[in-house]
Image (cartoon, rainbow, N blue to C red):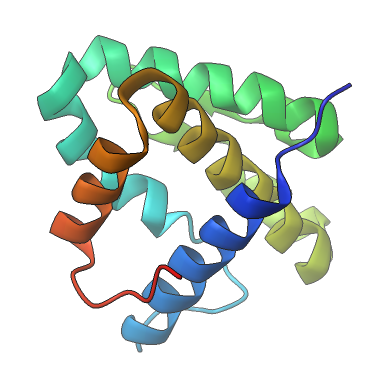
Length: 134
C-alpha cells in the first residue's frame, strides 16, 4: 500500500491550518472539510462536475487505504462528501483530523499528477492568495 507523500501531507496541513485559522466561526473539531469544498467550484470549472467527482472519488479510495474510516464516506452527485457528521461523532478528534489530512493530500497529489504542479499551485493561489506554500 502506498501512502500520501510527506510533501503532500505537509501541503494539506498548511491548507487546512490556514483555512481553519481564517474561519473563526468554524468548529475546529467539527466535520470540516472546507478546503475540499472551496476547491470544488474551481476544479469543476477546469474539469467539469463529473471530473471533479471522479477525482475526489479516486482520492477517497486511496485515502481509505490509509485511514479505514474514510471507506464509509461517499461522494454525492454534487461533489460534496456524505457521511462525515455520523463519523465525526464516533471518532476521536485526532483520527478525524488524520483522515482530513490524508484525503486532501491524496486529492492534491492526484491534481499534481493530472494537471501539473504549476497549475495546481495557480488554483490554490486563486482561492488562498496569502497561504504560505513553502
